[in-house]
Amino acid sequence: MKYPWRFYEKSVGMWIVESNRGVHSFPLDTKGLDLESVSREYFHYFDEVISALGDQFAPTAIEYPPGTTVTESPIPLYLYQAKMRLFETWREDIKHCSMWAPGAVFKGLTEVAVQNEGKVISVQLPGLLNMMFSGMPGTDRYTLMLSTNCDIWLEKTLSGEVNPVGRANALRLEKALKKIREALDGEVVHFASEAEGVKLNANGFA
Image (tube, rainbow, N blue to C red; front, side, top):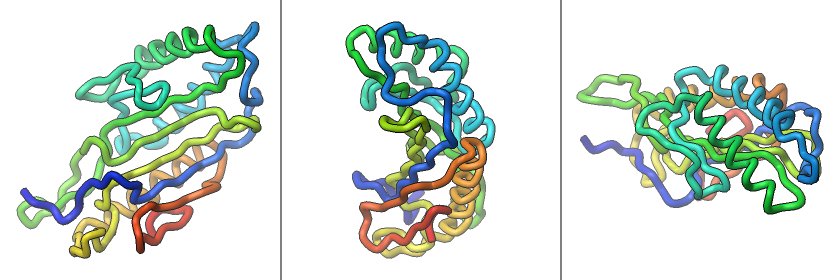
């Protein structure tokens, strides 16, 4: 079935949420680094975000560094095992650098509304949202970047077509950003789009 929305190589929307202050200041000196302590705080925040999002986002792949797959699955990851694999990747990485900060890219399934045969239904689709979560160098905070290169969230697509599910999906994205802010006890500190004419704000697409 042909839909009015589609994917692009450029970013349609991107939001950066900064957490409240944490225990560690980044980057960290890898000499004598207590990686278990760092990972406990990192995964605490990560688990809070995933719990807050519920069915709205389910990770199916982890990359570290960006572009290098740590683990992936066609269905939602078993997160305990996935986090252990990421931890082991970090452990290997810190052997080869003097300064380091925890981080990873998470890709997965996003629950959205689509119109099928005249009816609006909820489905989980891959590739709609990506999350990059990392310790922010020069601070004692974590940042989560949520990005999309799809215009399924817009009432009128980038090509100018009417998208009947745009408003419903924009509200879902607004809800997701609110839950992320609450989970991190933080705020959206930056938002932007590479697509011309797209209006957005700290709460999503305007």
